[in-house]
Image (cartoon, rainbow, N blue to C red; front, side, top):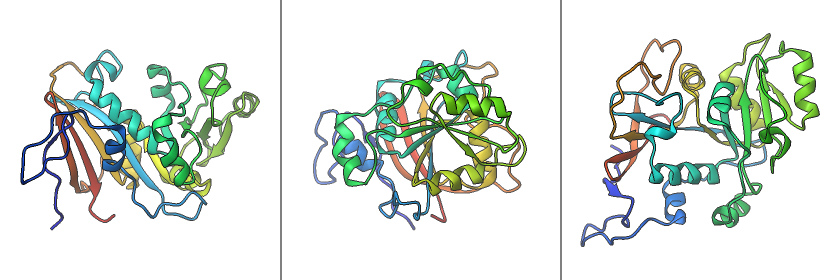
Length: 269
């Protein structure tokens, strides 16, 4: 039986069973400790990768409002979002999410500089965009102004002119599939082979659904927003279902202002 962390208010320290919690906001260091990757991951291409997802959902299962996640998020959710990026080697996102959310390059943050240096990481995570069609605007800052070169992950049959355009813009093209299809399990392996073992995917729902169906998702950080939206917004994971649902266990649970910040892990990792 694995022990679970108690429900903890993000504006307080972790509760001491012998006394009341102290009223104050968690520091970024405390959040980074709470969300640390397993300690045996290595940045030399020999470690076992760990794929973590970070998503937000309303009480009625909507992953977006008006096509974006911002409307169902909150300040504490964005602090965790920034912390998860600050710990990752690479941020993986589908092309549609990159377009809808207006992705920009990940930035270096002083709060995580020492932690990243001690782990052998660069100043900021790379962003890896998964796309079969290569339908991307390579003039955007994500490709022209990154601190770390952006990765474009595609299939071997992707249009050659788009591959050339990506490379001309300074992106690194990663082949992770045959024909025009990107293999989600191969995405994880190809990135790990480049030393990017601490992996974070921010979706969207279709990409997360592919990772789930391939059985390669190790951890889900899910913010449950205390909102109801109705409508027909996507769930956090879409696409074909799995034959047998995979069981995850609750690793931690935090709360602030009715928002629940959950972290679930696979039972076999």
